[in-house]
Length: 456
Image 1 (cartoon, rainbow, N blue to C red):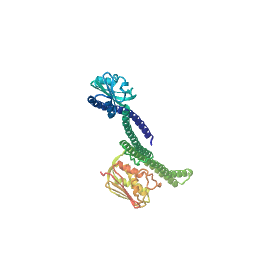
Image 2 (image 1 turned 135 degrees about the horizontal axis):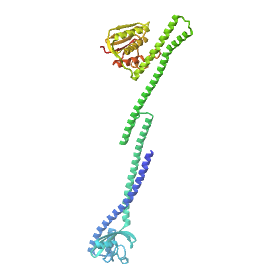
Image 3 (image 1 turned 90 degrees about the vertical axis):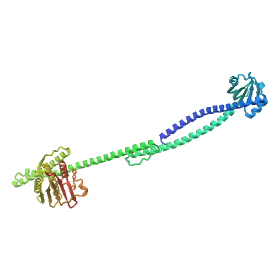
Image 4 (image 1 turned 180 degrees about the vertical axis):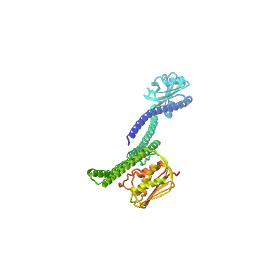
């Protein structure tokens, strides 16, 4: 049993004990007065009957003794001066004058008198009832011991009944306490489950409306905690992903910069240590150093551009130009970079209003991406403001399609001159122009990357 239940029961028992004691004392005196009142009424009725009998048969000791046996009450006849003229249980000659008895005084004054007192004649407590009847007073006396035994029986019956209800109340209280304890234990177990993040744990309480209200609040709290933990878990995953992406970015930058830096360092060291190198060889080394430095500059520009996108500091410089002309320039640039690859251009004049430099970057990223992941011919098509790049390369798996435009995401986890920024930058540029990148791909069959600008 819970401590709260023990405290409740102990206080209840003390309260019931105090109530039992108070009710017992109160009922004892109440029943006593009721019984005395009832006996007094009975004696008054008998006194009236005796008055009639005495008036008809006359006053004598023999008659009052005979009547005493019938009504089981002591009978005394007293004259106005207090002398006993007839007595049913004692020798009247040896009895004191009764004029000063309270019940006699009251009867002489009002017609009826009543008192409860000790009899000096019979040495016993009596209930006295006196009635004035012409020239004498009829007094009846009934022993209090018999009245007391009568109301004691009644009082004991009441006490027994009250004790039964007290016991029943204690049993009911114990059962109530057990149910409350069970409900509290269920709530405590549920709170313990919440502490261990068991938010789906059922809570069944229905003993009282208060417990139902508590359960509803706890379930609402569990839902909030579950939602908060879900957000926390999502945020933690995001932090881990950002951390992983940062590590990958550092690794990508380190790897991407390693080759051009090594080229610059190697050729520069050779030039410094061999001042007599032939002019044509020196020229070729300088060209290699220049190309490597250009590659580093391009990677830095790409990173800077991605950071501008993130900060929202990029402002478009729109102008009217021919999309076909820009596509032709991009194709020529890529042909010079990929001299052993075939790029087919299918182009029709398409005039648009956009940021030419940004659109050129987007085209370059898409074409460069196609050339990296395809060994066959690549087709570039421009028609009606729509730019497309098609290849017959490795294609993209379906589970990767929704993520390839994310920052730092790479389909193949090998450092192939890619930091996972090309498609991200392209998607952002198109978003600024109110367009989007459309991708269609089949794994091991090829891919198509397209976007459309409004033609003017």
